[in-house]
Image 1 (cartoon, helix red, strand yellow):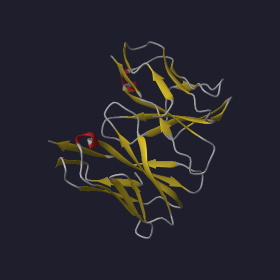
Image 2: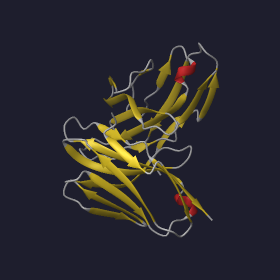
Image 3: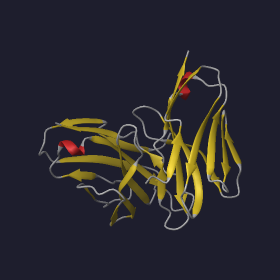
Length: 112
Length: 113
């Protein structure tokens, strides 16, 4: 069973609107959580990384939050642009062995 | 932009052929990885290397093999390709740190007929 669940599976929004993507995980012990952006036909690119003690991390229009108690994270995209159309992948690293657990991703489409 | 390269980007071959997917990085990273990704599914680790002459199998069983003779080069080989090998193959590298970021190549989309 996948230890990282993302929702929604896909999302369509209008350009300029905001959106929030969710990531729930059961990975334990926890080391850190990353959000990656993967454009179609490309490899993933790291957006943010958060450790246990961090609640929020921003990267331009992208803001990630982490609640380590409930094992939930979100990625908020502000004032979306057409170039935000991509798959957003949540990745949780285990503290023991440093194994990575990948979510299936949320496919975001921003339309004009 | 990460300095990690994969060739070819796209490959269509017939069953039974031997293929090698190339991956190279110019960042001097010791750790390198191969992932397999099917549409709408999560990435699965199939091989990794922590340095020259070090290779390990990942979480997902794969009939492919890898080698690490040079730090910058981590090729993946399929001795006899089958349609079940059709997938996207992503190579990544990272530095030797606990919170190291993995930098991904653009991927090779393999189709076996």
